[in-house]
Length: 635
Image 1 (spheres, rainbow, N blue to C red):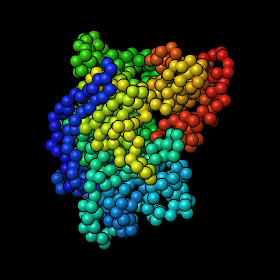
Image 2: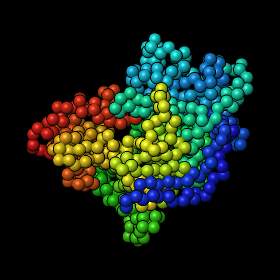
Image 3: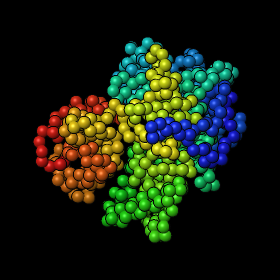
């Protein structure tokens, strides 16, 4: 079985080895902390855990009564064996593809590890996928079986089965799929599972994860068991000792990221590998997630910026509702100043918070910061954030409030993180150093190139290896490395806007800053071959509902509200704030508020919430033309 090497001391990773050319840093690399395993697979993890520490708690599972109940390593192994035997009994052969279409749940992770124990290749499908998206993934992957969560998904897949000749089995979680599999396989010997596991190694395909398909058909990324080992072993050795040392409580995290996404899968695998207690939350709706955080009480989080923004905005809205908005805003400014100063001291670039700042922070800790930490469950002191930039102001706020956020950067093709903030050397506004075992290079045109053991094997059904630049994987992202090897992502190569005046504008930083505002749901910056930059904005439902209540405008129709002078003035402040981060030539000159939202069902968003720019531009072409046709108000 593949086992990890003894962990190093927290923070023992050295600084990146940087290479400069022509006066700029073009490469940074960090050696691995862990030697890659020469044998074994992810399917071995539950068995190794049960052999080494059978009574250790590896997961907690929320019951129908809302109570979280622990699952030991030995108990999880037994469930994996029973489920794997059921998959084998169904006729699934070594290397067959098993698709899973469900929200984040205990059953999802169980099926993942049972599939691997049975020698299968798991294929995630977003639970919000349309019929055509799900059908494409099932057909392209040649999935032999599919597990769905509910009857709606079962009907959708059933309707497409005539066009899916490879699909032989369809199971439904909420009607007892796991129990059915266990019953079907009860007479099979466990030796069948053992032989399936022993037939796999690090080079065996573990999963096909399909890209979000912002510009075309999603492509299946082939990720091997070795890719996951390179990713999670180095990540957990780098970060887990820090999380473990924050208190006497065993390390634990609540997973609310979709397991259909590579980040969520990496978290689940990493937690099982490191025996970090893992819980699952199926909903990121504000009330649902806050309730699950309060019940589970994790010691650290792995999140996307949306969640941290939601917690902040909910706290601010609550303060405004009770007449303490100005107090919250002052507390936020103090936290940002304190966090920035504390990080500067930690990295040796500043003296740290002065006496006045320390006293001010102590004053607001019980009034504001403790409430923010309570919203995250009360015990969180660290969070890893990825998916899109969090923004240095919000990162500084959380650091000042007592939650240090480590940002990371990666893609499906790199098994999630390729860079991460080093635990003892954070630098706000960057996505950190290369993960140990990874190298980052900046091409002459600014594109970020990556190399490491977690870089995928290629695309499914594509002939030949992935397109490479002298052995490096081209990410399509544009970025910069500083003198110490920290990476900053500045935009997408294909999304760079070139105005009629020849100015290059990266829309992502402006859009990320705008989306941090509680009233902004989605936004798209426009300006290619145009005289200046503009933006389309949609309204965030929770933020808008609060704004309506505070201004007694609940009865105003949305079609009228998007022209409301008071609302437009508030949004103009958000635009001005975003503009403060760029030059005048790059700034948003005008914006338009849409009564409609960008949705996945409408074809404007991918399942991972990325904007399909061409679709938005086509569907809202008239609104875009209006921004350039007439002058007048800025909104």
